[in-house]
Length: 267
Image (cartoon, rainbow, N blue to C red; front, side):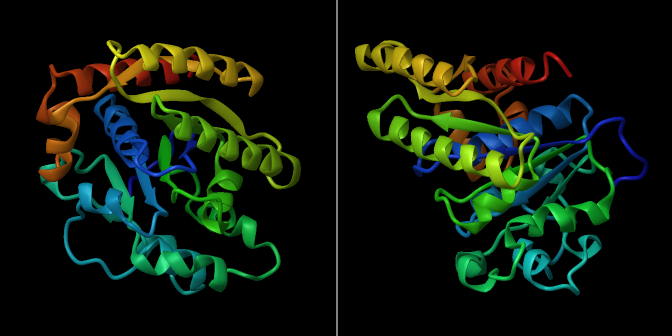
């Protein structure tokens, strides 16, 4: 766990109702890009598929995960957070709270009064050790997503250039409105980011206009940065490396750097 305290800690949730939108890829890339800028990062994997945990392997054995952190009062933050393996290129500035398949049962197990606040309350035990906490949420609207949005300062919504992703964006927006009303009135939508982008497709340009209109209705923005479809992003994940080290001059690194510059412009 890092020593000292940053001036400001920001919690970002990466959310999308529809799967396959680059949600986990975006969580990993934003965190890695911020770490490359000297920011101390905690990744939290709340997705039962645990793809973020695979792409960011830890150093050593895993005894405790986000599931225990949320459900077991004995599982303190000190044993739920792990240094990343050096091959990720993010050691020692970034840590991970791993996910696991048991998180799929969270809606049944986390049922007590105040269940929406479990993550926020438990994170408070850390004090602000990190500059940014990046939460990868499940592709759904259950208690894990609600916990992430209740704990977060802002949410980023990845979206493909297709009608089903736009529908998913509308569904997550409704959930955000509910969270703002009942559990986190200060939650902000940082923006919608278009992923797996192909500017040569006519359909993409039409849907971009639709997304810009949707962002306006949500009181947020469609990020100017577009994350282009590139093989290097998938290769980096398979090699368990961050995209900025794996292909530093490629489209993936360039596009995610542009996104991070937009995201942090006013920090």
